[in-house]
Image: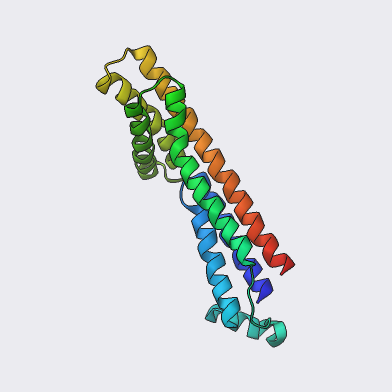
Length: 192
């Protein structure tokens, strides 16, 4: 079970990192897979596909039932995932405010980032999600400053640039947290 769990976790971490780069919930995918592996290890069973593979390779490869991860590891990874989500949501708004934008443009930068990511995905699936989110965050902040707060173009564009930088920062934060969680889960299986 340990080798098959490790292979599954490595695949989930790789997929989760790709998802995090695209501003999707990759860390949550990693945690879902870890929770399922934990459940299977405690129950002393393996998923049917893995069980058949183990039987074909070596019937003695199964490990006695018991937790695959420490509960501390899973708890800390879960806490990191929550911190990552909060930081991602606030990064664009915070940098918009730092760049002189209003609360309205900060809120619209968050909405614009989400809408831009969705629209970008429709046009150029992998890269469009990331680029669309950055452009959407900037456009949301510009809209908030120019159309709603009636500020001049210089102030509006400055707030938009701050929002775009914040969206880039949010993606970097999310990827760093995904790498941290992924490596923690892989290492936990290796030392188990």
